[in-house]
Amino acid sequence: MCNPAITFRVDRMRGTSRIRIRLLVAILAVASVVLQGCHSWPEERDAAIETERVFDEVSRIEPPSDTVEPWPAAYRRPPLKSMQIVGGVEEWKLIYFCQHHKAEQLKQIVHEQFAARLFNQAGQSTAIQNYTVTAEPATNQLVVRCAAEQDVDAVLEILDATDLPPIQVRLDCIVSELSASMTMDRETTMLIENLFGEQITLSGKEGASGMLPAFPGASLRSPAREKFGLKIGVSEPLTGHQVQVLVDLLVSRGYLKVLLNPTLEVLNGQTARIESKQHVPIQSIEVQTGGFGEDTILRTETEYYDVIDSLQVTPQVFADGSVSLETRVQMASYLAPQGVTQTQIVTERVLTSKNSRIRLGQSLVIGGLRRTEKRDVIRGVPILKDIPLLNLLFSGRDAEENVVEVLVILTPTISTQGRPYREIADMIEYRHSTPTGRPAGNARPGDWADGSEPDPDARSDREDPSQP
Image (cartoon, rainbow, N blue to C red; front, top):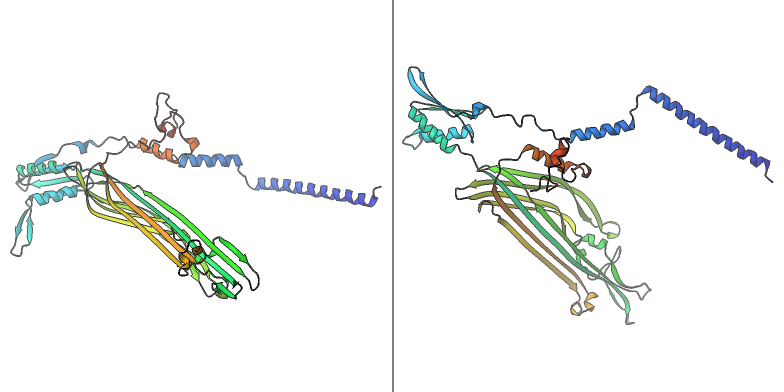
């Protein structure tokens, strides 16, 4: 038999919930109508399509419109030699377009070759010029005025012999750094009461956090070491007969490999520099003592360091096919593990070479560094620390070994005259594209970069156009 009062209450609650649901639906409908009337909300699909379109347009590399413009004909004409009458006096002019060097550089050569110099008694020289040379930087042009035609011919002969194509040197640098660190740490905590029933006690000192190690290891030089580890042994907490013999063993290994491969192209006799800089955070641990119960407090602070990789080179090519290099290489890293806790530290290597002679196309190790560090400290009870097995209970050990190797290799070659723009653009687009947007099969990178259809007769043996 159902209670009529309970049935009435249930029906009333159901009716109330239906009213609330209908009221909520009505409020949402009214709000939707009001919002549509107040503002034109965009479709979600339209927003997604527009976002993809913007991404596609911005990431596309547009070819410049003037890459195939012909060189002005005025710059290809031969040197112009003419005779003029100025002030009733005959003089000759030479108009020369510099082909491979700056006009100021060639002007300096002409001055040094044709200027007559007079020396006074103090040894100071004064240049007497019977000609005039004007350099025009905008057109890279020389205008030479001479008194006779033979002087113009002499200047032109010097210009023909010195205005030669300069050698452009490509320098490939390989900097390799290998480092490894290994530590072995052992410490013993001992507390033995009533040894042999003769009220003999063997124990270390007791601190605020408990029994301190009787024979510490690396915790003496690295306070963070005492905050972790695994102790193995016997612990019997009987009053008056406590036995606590614990051995803490820890082996840490870490390595770092750094490969730096910068490339520079520079004219013969000029200086080029490339630099990469990172501002990285490094955590450091500070130790504070004198806290509650004289306990050790570790505090972590974050400091920022500049990690700089750079290469600066000045090549000088000689007629015998060799090149002299003045080089400065700097390499830094912030991931090198160090110490028993293998915390990261900042390392920096700088190598400077004033004059390294090498044949073009050959590699030369201009610098190398190998360093090995070994450290081993044993603390224990005399005689007992030298007995096998017993030394685990009556001694502590702190051993560490670090090795570092740094090699700097230079390879100079004669640089090419550049690569076609379309090839470079394809390479960049390939590297910045997603896997689904890359050309498939035998499609060339240029076929999809400009939206054209792939050529069925074209075949590429490589996917990445940047690889030779």
